[in-house]
Length: 351
Image 1 (cartoon, rainbow, N blue to C red):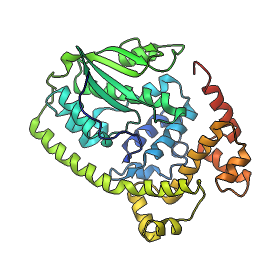
Image 2: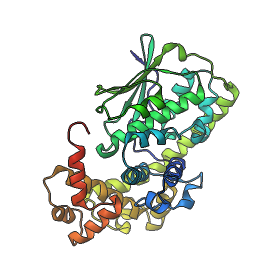
Image 3: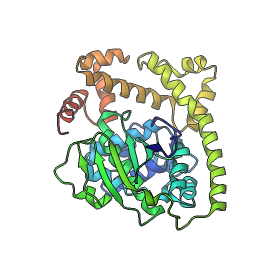
């Protein structure tokens, strides 16, 4: 088995445009969920989502996914329906480059080469295996509470985009790591095949013959122009993306306690004003990162079952447990105790 191309990123935690969050917000709005509820805990506003220049942190999109899954339900049909909303046009110049590629092979290789211009959380690996192509989604680093939801959304989105590129594409087989749900109707409706559940990997296969099939809208001159623009976008993004992680790492070192933006700025050899500006350019803020780190650490500590709510509050730097409970409910929409109970249920076999 030979890998078609190496993905440009190995982890989901890369900055991205706000287009995906805008799409999710529109999806949720159609189902009665308002923008304030969708964007809770992200530090984003509906106006920002309309600006194509806004870059958001992956954890902001992750927070949106959690808000939507918590409100609309994490049922498989919801995740699959959301994935079907991601068409090639959703991805801007990146999508235009894919649809202008000479063949499906070229489009896939391009997509992997510029994967950090996508919105995926599960990292795709594409390999040629005998007479078939295997597309595997690696969700091992995706937070467990939304891993199933995001694997479904991401593969549904990839399948939708492949059909945009080459409408004749059909899957041969489909396997999922999770157990079989009560109904598979939504799976068959989206993918056209009945999946196998309890598989070793999340993997879809299709006939090798599709790989070198000419794409209907192929244009080598256009794809060359698009790739040049994508190179520039990726270069600019990588220049700006480090600041969020730098701040995040310093907050994690102090256990999620709010060290103060002035202190963090000094550690980074920046003024507080420069740090604030660079975080804004990266689509986030110091307060949003403090919340994000505290939320992630809180979920991790509560998930062990070894610490009480009061212990977690103290470790995160809260003076009182009530302040932590209030903050956690703002992040997750439930109390820490309710979150622990729900996580325990999800962790049972068959979930």
